[in-house]
Each structure stands twice: as structure tokens, then as C-alpha cells.
Length: 245
Image (cartoon, rainbow, N blue to C red; front, side, top):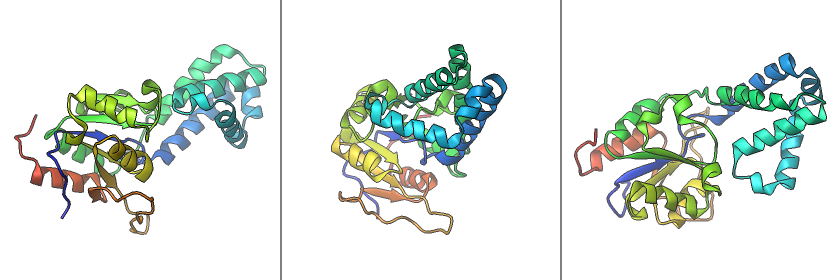
């Protein structure tokens, strides 16, 4: 039987690979960027095919580690560099980023995600805590969340304990009364527990239906579920207050 050591008064949620798979969204975004460059900056499109963009990203990681926590800043720097090196108009960086980001936010939710979010939000406040840069307003689910806190805004990524503590402060709750939910054993589970939050691992089955094993050298979390629906079932069965909505 899953258990926690204190009442849950709010939930913080990871986004990518917890509410939706990130790979299709990034593929769509890269395709949108290629189309934009082909139309408006053909020299950059020719100079920077997908393999070269991946090499540039690895170079960025090495040369500008101060941008590691901010996906939007990383992408804007890449676009500015790509256009400049190809001899294209630097003013195209902003609309190129807009094309990329709009597609990046056209996510395909896991089948259980939206119904489960509705159920969770009816019980406790929800907050998004993510290392990515997805925009809940653009995606259309911001009404289910009290706020969104990203690593770019905070200044450091998960598993840094500060981002979790900042979310708890905004919720007005001690960390022990907040449950963080995510797919990453290190960034989500270990990071949240280091900050004093309770943790839930969403361990979705792979294409063949197999669940991942817990291989991180830290204790397994208090809660583990294969879907957000299972988490919502648990919260509805154990939550000791009336629905908040």
C-alpha cells in the first residue's frame, strides 16, 4: 500500500515526459524551424541541417554552461549564431524562435494526463516545476495550475533544492506538505526529497508494457504509479478534505 508521512496539501508537477512525451514535441519544433529557415533564411538552412544543429548544441553546453538551466536562452543563442555565421539577417532570430517555440508547445498529452489533472486540481493546488520551457498558457492548461516555475526563471535546474523550496514558498506551505510528481528519478524524486518534499515517481510502461526498474542510488520514493490516473485514484482515496473546486 502506497503511503506518505504527512498530509498532502499541494502537488508540484514536472511537465516533459510526465504530462506528455517530449520527443514528438521536439521533433515537431525542429521541423518547424527547418521550414522557417528554408523560407526566410535559406543560407542558414543549408549551413545548419539537423546534425550540425546537434553539434552546435553540444558546443553550447561546453562553452556556455551558464545557459544550461535556460532552454529558451539556449535556443535564442543558437539561432543568433546560426544566422550570423550563415550571413543572414540577425532580425530573423526572433521570428525563427517563435516558429520553433509554437511547435514545441503543440504537445501530445498522454491519454490519462488531462482527465487526471482535472481530478488532481479539484483536490489540491497544482504547480508546475520544470527544467523545460513549455508554456502552460500556450498549451492551454494553465487554468489547472496555481503557477508555473521553470528553471530558466528560477536560475537553476532540478535537482537543485532551491527550485522546489521556491515553489513551496509560493504555495505558502512547508515542504513536507507538498508532493512533487515526475518521471526523473534524480531530478524529480531525489531533488524533491533533498528539499524536504514528498515524492512520487511516474514510471510509465514502455511500448512493450514493461516498467523501468529503480536504479538510482537513492531510496525509492514514497509513491510510484504507472500513470497520473493512478495517482489521482490514490489522492481521491486518501485526501482528507473536501474538493477545492
